[in-house]
Amino acid sequence: MKYSVQVHVMPLKELLDPQGKAVLGGLKNLGLNSVEDVRVGKHISLQIEASSEEEAKRIAEEASKKLLANAVMEFYEIEVH
Amino acid sequence: MKYSVQVHVMPLKELLDPQGKAVLGGLKNLGLNSVEDVRVGKHISLQIEASSEEEAKRIAEEASKKLLANAVMEFYEIEVH
Image 1 (tube, one colour):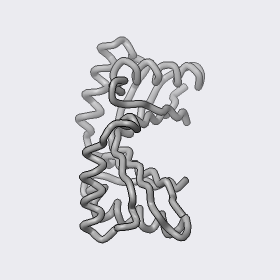
Image 2 (cartoon, rainbow over the protein chains, first blue to last red):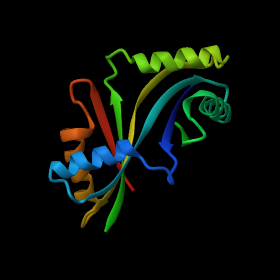
Image 3 (cartoon, chains in turn cyan, yellow):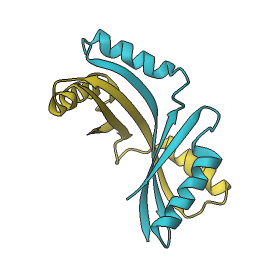
Image 4 (cartoon, one colour):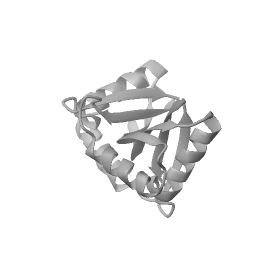
């Protein structure tokens, strides 16, 4: 069965997010001052053939640990649909 | 009130996603052959001060149209928490 798995890879909260700061500055220049903080990461959509939702999540977990996320600077969250 | 708004910016479905193809190739090299397709986009987390959830969403919509997403090549989805 095919599962659609969403992986969010975000910079660790304690790290400075230069990309987020740049976007925040851009939004302020556009007059969107009610935006108080911005953090930018990756949204990765995987189509996985698996026998169960658990197996699809396990494969996404392995992909995240081995390739999608850099554990030194990023954390990831997995959602299976 | 402060709202946490998540914006997913993904490449349009009809466009080739070279970054997704590169990640798919990398996963195949790692032996994760049950991953059949990968699409990579941006996950942007916004902290917005607004008087209601609707207003927070409207601000995120304006930010997406003006800066976060390039309408020629990308589409966006907004989730308010």
